Length: 189
Length: 189
DNA sequence: GACCTACCGTAGAGATGTCTACGGAGAATG
DNA sequence: CATTCTCCGTAGACATCTCTACGGTAGGTC
Image 1 (tube, each protein chain N blue to C red):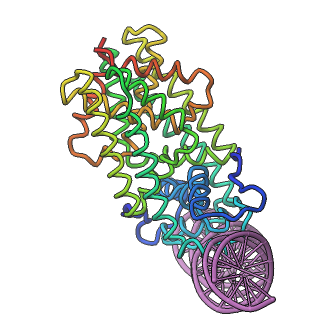
Image 2: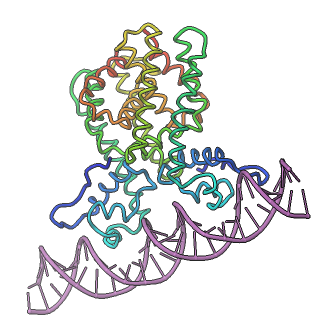
Image 3: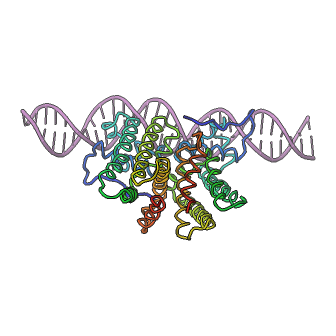
């Protein structure tokens, strides 16, 4: 059931980023209430004493996690899609494949639940979703759909990808085929 | 941030089901690791001592929650759609609206996260999703799509609805319009 | 060799949580 | 009125968690 622990090799010292990445793993697997200092330390093969060298307290870490998720994990996909050269429908296809390929490290589901009971997480989640929706709408406008139609198709794409992510589609060997079939329904006029 | 607590009126005694429903609320808002005996008791205005009259222990409660979610909350929507009389595309529309209407009490997102670290939850989640996908595929076959196309459209419908659920679409006043636009993309040939 | 920086471990206070043991209250039953 | 059935509260043992205080160590610097 458990994923491969993100241990550090050869008794190396851990950086602030090591703690952050390990936290993302715990967050994805156990949810926000499962993010405990001792749990992350155990995963890194360290003790909680060392944690407080890198972070002021647990809240400090959680704030960093939110920022990292919004900037790196959401922004990364969008920038990658902007870089892509080719026809609009292929750009969409590229993005969809990219999301599933990087599936394993996405804590999106856990953050959505987190947002239900925490104001900071809710605000961050809302901002990130808005950004995803707006970018996706643009993708479908480029493809030639009218604004309102492009908006709903973009929205469906985001939701479908998040759904397949929480559903662990990437563990299924025929996932590229499944994604292509989703893609066809979305881009066909 | 917090939802209205599901308190019991006038110092009434709580039934096993009261505890179960309160647990669903906590599960939805805080995730599985937030489901603590004392937290649920607090929400009901009781103490943990009373909990152990209704349940052997925390695991006993969690098992019941999984069964209830799978049988009642998933089965309910399907049975309602089967009852529906009218053309296939309207049956699909009815189901989509129904899901969002009952949105507030759905802990689907929390259960998806739970399934990442617990074998029992994972099995239950898989079964429920299989049932949803198969029923949805049938809906779109009735609508006249070929099996493979019906399957992917059903899958997209389920994911979109779960996405809009975690996204709290039901709090948006124009949600029926948004759902109808999703619907058009899915059922149009 | 002395020093400094960066990182880690241990010990412990205080909070929170699970679960058991047991006693008590109110409604229903005889 | 006495008894029983249901449900609830309290107290306490034990575990886990956050966070502080402080001491230790390895590698680079002067």
